[in-house]
Length: 447
Image 1 (cartoon, helix red, strand yellow):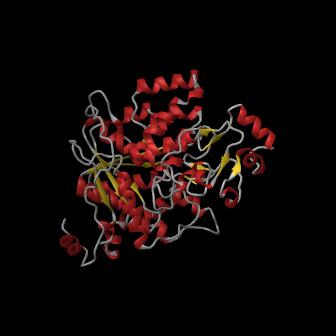
Image 2 (cartoon, one colour):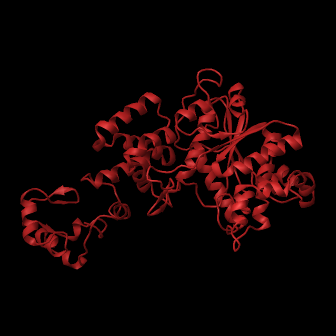
Image 3 (tube, one colour):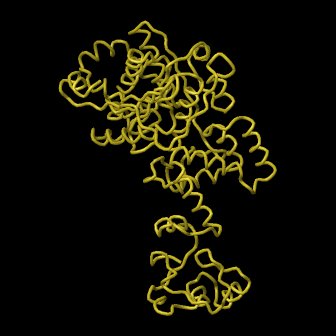
């Protein structure tokens, strides 16, 4: 719709509407056979260990014919995180199996906040912040789905386009009458909050279920969408949507949820000591993103290859064998880190992340900035020296190592140099009278 048409529908109010996104540095998928032949989405996710719990008849309906399916993402943060990848890959597999995926960004519901899985009321976002977050998520989702060049191109939608136009009295008459408060109080996301005498739940968050259910109705009307998928905490909202389609439209719709993902140690996936791993490179650098996957435990890496990459069964079985026979090579972890980092950040960022990783093991520092070096070596023991001590002719390497605390004494430093165990900026230094000057300091900051 043109901008003028959108303004007309919204009473002169500008609304956010997403056009087909441009694909930047993404990789085209190899299409799979259509559903009902040799492969379908349920069979694929079952093998990959993420078979969703689904409403009655969902598997048969999805296998019978190509369907339009959606997953929603509320812009409550400035970026998606790696935990979101589990549901994003669900859309990927649906598209590869011949279905049409819709990525719905909740520009409207994001202003309310989903109480599912939360123990306390969310801080409400401003409209401007929600819009910025929604736009950022739209760009990130475009790295995973095919929006052109295929017979079932993905679509992008923003529920602010219809929720922003709703009139409250009309909504309560047409939608609210189909919801039983008794049934809503029995939903797990609401029940947990009601059990907290101090926290409770506001009417704002209590109404979220109605809005998400109405999203499903709108996508059913506009796009012929008959499937919704999401995380396991979305079960109540999804079934509310399938029921509302039956009541308002007399139609049939289905839903499914993916189980909560944890590591072998029982930690929620995507959470680290340093915090959440985001898809936005400004929040989590490509180097740290790459390192997150590279550090996957041997007990988890094969499962992660199934979940987060498009590697085929034969390849993954080969990596499983490598984990068992040659775990020190970490071939599976490297394959995992390479594919996911390439998908999210592109080939150039992957190359830089790999170079940074190699630097930790003596690789070349060429082309790296001081900021990148600071990040790479953030957790590596270091010592400080006054810059003016390196002025002029500088300082003997032996003195630098001993006096800065990098080594316990000048004698140890001398022995290490003679045995070939000392490198300066990745270059071996064996001459015990070698002097270090400011010229050796990268951007005047690091040796």
